Amino acid sequence: MTAGDDTGRPGLVVVSHSVRLAEGVVEVAAQMAPDVRLRPAGGTDDDRVGTSFDKVESAVTGLLGEPGVSGVVVLTDLGSATMTAESVLEFLDEDARERVVLADGPLVEGAVAGAVAAQSGAAPAAVAAAVAEAARSFAAAPEGPGAAAPAGADGVPAGVPAAAPAPGAGELAKTFTLHNKVGLHARPAALLARLVAGYDAEVTVNEVDAASVLALMGLGLEKGDEMHVRARGAQADEAMAAVAQAVADGFGEE
Image (tube, rainbow, N blue to C red):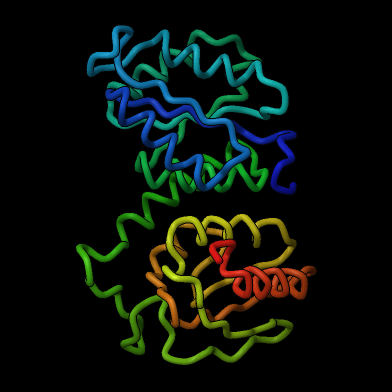
């Protein structure tokens, strides 16, 4: 699936106790996945802090009724929001219920990861899995600015190889230097994750999955840093060429 093709993508509903929080999360996730339908369902019916059955139901059924939406993934911020979402699912007819997945993961990171997966055409269950994976990425992230990433067996921080690793059998390996102003921050990471997900290939950057936007962001790569890219699979050549072009173009920021 290519960017701009909205056939068969899941949509996301963000359920929060706060109107502004739900809208803000949708705003951030939309920057990473411009073709994904995202709907906020925050606050009570009169926009106070709390949750609303009717708002959640309207967001879910509205997305299910839109052309080109293959299903809906629902994210929630707190337990009572999850209970509200579960109640909505119980009242849906069986066909609609089968198209809705309640995801378990951090709200902001999960929405970003899920939206990027949906942009790439992943099925609702795979989008929910990306949300869950965001919880593991979040738990493993360094604490506080400047904190070191966990070290591997060789003492080198995870995801930051001291030198370009030697390619394995049937594997391509290239090293690129980032030259866009702010390095591999949110938008370039999302672009790269969407890009590699479109190829029949396994691609890693500095030993993390290049299809995971949060893993890429977790590397903390800045301008002048090196990306050690590996690719293997039926479209490894095409994927590597696409990565090379994206880096050369400064991920569209130049």
